[in-house]
Structure formats: structure tokens, C-alpha cells
Amino acid sequence: MILSMTGYGSAQLARGGVCYAVEVRTVNNRYLKLSIKLPEHLQFAEAAIDKLLRKRVLRGTVSFALRVRSDGAPVSRVINMAALQAYVDTLAKVTTPGDTNTTIDLATLATLPGISEAPEYDESQREAQLAVLAEVAGSALDSLMAMRQEEGKALRADLDDNISQVRDELKNVSSRAPLVVTDYNERLKSRVAQLLQTAKLDLDQESLMREVAVFADRCDISEELSRLDSHMDQFGDLCSRGEQVGRTLDFLTQEMLREANTIGSKANDGDLARSVVLIKGLIDRLKEQVQNIE
Image (cartoon, rainbow, N blue to C red; front, side, top):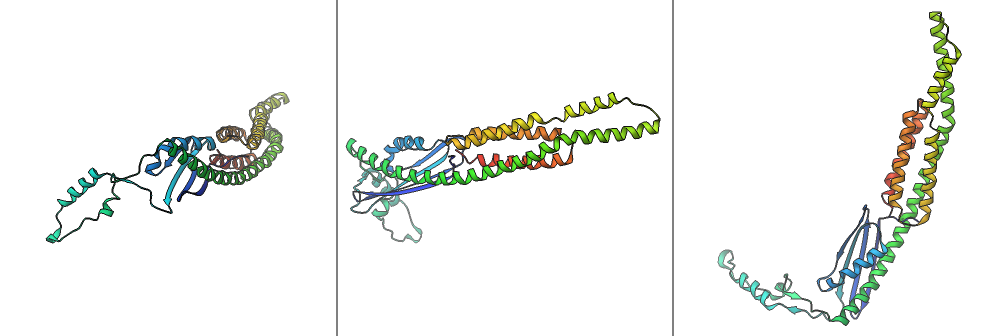
């Protein structure tokens, strides 16, 4: 099953009076790009989260955000007295319009950068935090992957529909192609006959057939049709693998478009040209959609 690179997942977990909430979002990217946002006191877990994300997501831009809220007693924090005093000293030098009296709110100062710091965890506490984070992050990733699978199913249905339409148009091309040479032969014979009658000249049949043979060789599209059909078979096989196939599918659509362009350049016929335009539009649609596949 193919996976979409677009998805969203979330999970919450409460442990020891602390609520952990994780949100994971993924969007298209040619490569894997991670953005991890953690509370200051849990920055040590970034490497573990990075490793966990890389195991589950192979391609795309991934945004991971963790929020932590204490439901019970607030988590004890260390006040940086030197930083607090520096803020107080700076604010004390500020003059206000009209020489009005002002007060300094210590609670507000405590929210300023560098004032309130989370205590350092010891090794056992870090291990406990990592276990909790791995659990809640794993649940969020499960939710994300479920959505990416559903999006992948919708993508697969759209791709199959486009491939089916391409095959229908190719049937029209295949049935029309042999008639192009026949029509050219008849038109050429008619034009030559008119010219010869006017000029009262004679042209041997062998020269006429040679000209038709050259035209038939020049507009032969059998190889292009065969390669395009093979590419579509391979496209369907890749979609059924359930592996990381987005880049390969992108390459295949480029090759399919190349064959369609070649057919178009050889199509000396209005009906063929119209079918080729439709085929190229459908392949462009395929190319656009595979950009969403991991």
C-alpha cells in the first residue's frame, strides 16, 4: 500500500500528575526534513525523538510538537537570582512619563527568559521521561500513519483511474495508427494522379510505394506504444508494493511523458494528435499526484 506524505496525528498521556500532548504533522518534501519542538526541560530527548521519527517516516517534512502541563503541584523550578537581579536593576533605571510611581511584579519577571529554569534530571529520571515520551510519541505516530494510509488509498484510486484513462486513449491510438499510413497512401496516389494527368507524365508504381514506405517508417509508433504500456504495468506493480516508491514513480511518469511526446511528434494525423494531448494531460496529473507519495 502506498503512503501519502500528508498526514496528522496526535496523542495525550497523563503520568504522575503531568499531561503530555503530542502533535505530528507531515507535508510533501523530496527528502526527509524534521522539525522537533520540545519544552526547555525536555531538550535532552530530542535525539531520541529524532530517531523514533526516522524509523516511522521515510520522506516528507515532519513537524513534531510536545506540550507538557502539570495537573497537580507545579514542577519545582530554580530561580536564577543573578539574572533576576539584573532585570530589577535595569527596570529601576527606567523613568516613566509624569514621574508616576511604578511597581515591579516579580511573578511577571519570573516568566522572562533566563529567570525560571527547570532542574536538571538525573539519569534515572531521564530514562523515565524518555519512556513516557516514547509511548505518547508512538501513539501520535500510529495516528499519523493511519491517516497517511487512508490518504494513500485515495491517491491510489486516483492514480488507477488516470492509468485506466491513459490505456483507453492508447487503444484509440493503436487502432488509428495503421490507418494513418493507408490514408496517406490514398492521398498521395490521388495527388500524384492529378499532377500526372495535368503534366501528362508517367510515374512508376515502385517510386510511389517507396515514398509510402518512408512515410510509414517515419511515423511508426509501435515501439513507443510498447514502452509506454510497459511503464504503466511497472507503475501499477510499484503502487502495490507498499514500499517507499514515490521517487521511482516520479521517474516513471517522466519516462511516460517522454514516450507520449515522441508519439505526438510522429503523429501526422489530427485524431492521433487529439489523443496524445489527452494522454499528456493525464500523465501530468499522474506526475502531480506522485509528488504526494512517500
